[in-house]
Length: 196
Image 1 (cartoon, one colour):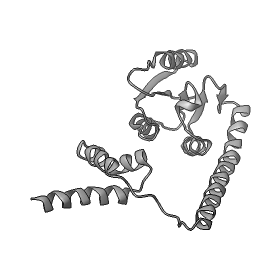
Image 2: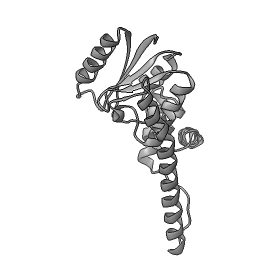
Image 3: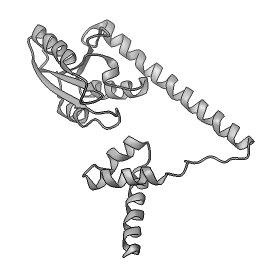
């Protein structure tokens, strides 16, 4: 028997209404006769999702993690596989209501077994495209490496850090390393010190 339904909802902005997703999850929990614990992210980016982090930490063995639709949870097959793999490791089932995916059934388990294959395929495609792009750049006389970070992004990073966002979340938001975030913060501090 499952313990609870861990429901996760994501809307892109505060202007969007989460009611449809919430209603569907409430109906599902009621039909299952289980308590619903709801987590709602209202964020413009799918990279920084504090409520998803909270939901993943809260789930325990025997829970069912439910979403209204797969695109509310993950932005790629690879990410979906990573999240559902963690659920599987913690003996938590997964249900996507609109997509009719349910790992509490044998068919649902088999379908999610295929996620690993598709995630690997997606990784290979990305890797191949990256190699092809670097090769093409070398032929044109350019070398690889990350592009320089412009001053506007540096100011945004600094503002987020000063507002209390963690370096990890900022790094995820901008697709750069945590060490780069600290480097930007230190650069800004040194500029301020030099200006005095």
